[in-house]
Image (cartoon, rainbow, N blue to C red; front, side, top):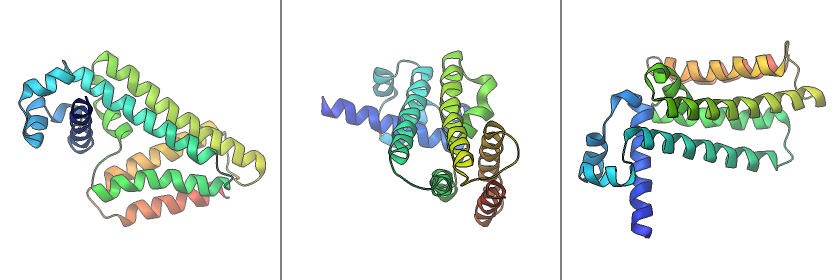
Length: 189
């Protein structure tokens, strides 16, 4: 049983890496099988359709984010420190020379199967809702000060972080740091 779980996790890990590197339409079961030295049938055993695999990757990422957010929310940290931690989630993608899951899925959104589109909406909604709540609480406590609504600011921050991850692929990691610096400046105005 543990071997079955381990195999499934390995498949999910490779699929997520490929999705972040190439996009959903940029890989196949053959790529995963080759990376794991498996036959395609081994992957089909765990995920009969590529859609099943895509949904599982998104659900796993959503659960991972919810666990991360719950852990951070349980700590008594200033809002700006929590925003720093949020930005560090995106920094990982810069270091790996990949895009974030939201960015990869949003780019391919029109070609994703309906089930994956729905999971993508849930994932993006969870992340943006958490960020919106953080910003609203920070503004209410007087720790953050920005124009407009927390919802608008969350959208601006998400777009900035996702966009700079794309830009960094053709420029340098310093672009990410400069963007984060500007985000923090803007919310502390």
